[in-house]
Length: 319
Image (cartoon, rainbow, N blue to C red; front, side, top):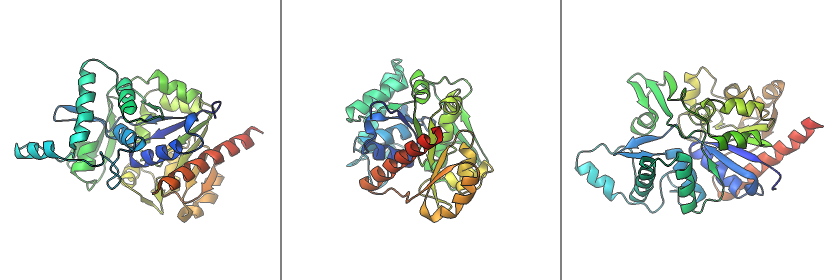
């Protein structure tokens, strides 16, 4: 597979599942990931990168499988003590997890790039699938609610996604510079897979980095997205509210609308197979298959089929 180049755009738990699937597929050696950094925030003076850490912990088999984030076999003595001291501790950071954030923050203060820090953390956890960042600059998703503007973590963790979403913006996006590694990876891609991640605040934040979406559109890669919706509902997270706030329908059509300028194919669950005709009319190839990834086998099977489908249809289009 050395001659093949596959790029996975990933964020959140859905992105981590897709990454695990590719890591355990025949296409592992050909794959690199571009992860979402717009969920990053500071807690207790420490810089936390939730989506990147979820990728690292998942691929390093250190993830807490029950909750889908954080380290397994975790304890919370530091957080418990901070609570006693009267500190806000709604962002649950375990003791092992805090070591990651202390290390990241220390290197950040030394001027080490976020990309380099990510590589070092990935190496510590034995992650072999390269994780690239779309930018080394600070970009943070902000969510406008009836309570005003909140950081994504405030909306997602503290408010449990209960508030209505009025608007979304990516703070710092105008001045962010794309990483050379991300642009080169996209430009050289044969297949770009968009994970079943939130299209607005996970994938949307990656694509909003200047030059990233343009690179995807100009790459010549076959772009295939896995829908994060099953029967009009999200498996996890607030993608439905985010789609609605962006004026898009909470179904396959809404996902298509998010990616239509560069999308070649959409993967939808069997429950949504009635959407196939409409998607085909838009010029898309459609793969209908079970998309709920629970076991390691299901993750590897789905992502293998996604890439095989993409390669087959890319060949057909070139013929």
